[in-house]
Image (cartoon, rainbow, N blue to C red; front, side):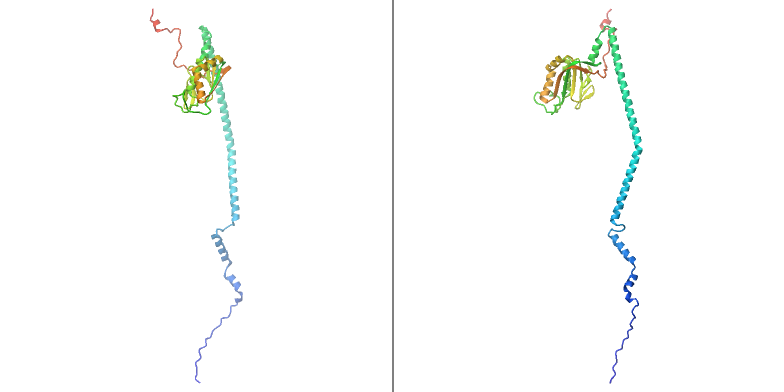
Length: 307
């Protein structure tokens, strides 16, 4: 029997099992700390925008902060108003006192002007009596507008048309250059006043403004000025005189017919009435720039040359 070689037998050494093989869960817990889990959860919340406090808690904290800020602003504003209130009240009282003092001063000056005007009028009348003038001074004062007057007369109210219309045939303002022909113009009042003077008026006022021999009725844009004082419609013209005769004469005059044409063609509103007693104020000022009073010693040049 021949010998056969046997394959070598490899010997294996078996490792003994771990003593904690049956404790795998406990081993896993010991090998992986819980801190890693918390770190991963925090990282996920931060990436999702949910890091820190919960949303509801953050919203409540923001609202509380806003309310605190609003309360602070209101408190500061109230404190400032409380501090500034006495100053504002003091300034207001000082302004009221100043207005009162200035008003009293203006009233005193007006009373002084009236007293001086009465004194001048009395002296004028006395001087005229001494020179044999009689009541001529009162007549001159009345006609010049230097004194307040009252008596019968007419009241004429002239107002713009309710709806203005452009001109037509027989335009009495053909050269006015205004397209708005339904408005009362300065030359309309000029013609009215001149017509009343011509019809026998002794004293005239427009909207309380007394007219004198030096009065001027002009226009500044669309406004009408009487002695540089602006008037607004309606224009109330008061004329002292024989009421019935004055009314009839004015309506029959060329200026009265002119006013009638404006009423018929352009809708300008007018109202004429006879009044029993009208009161017209004195003119505010009378300034003569050129005329000089004549003295008793003044003689014509021809008489000086005679012997």
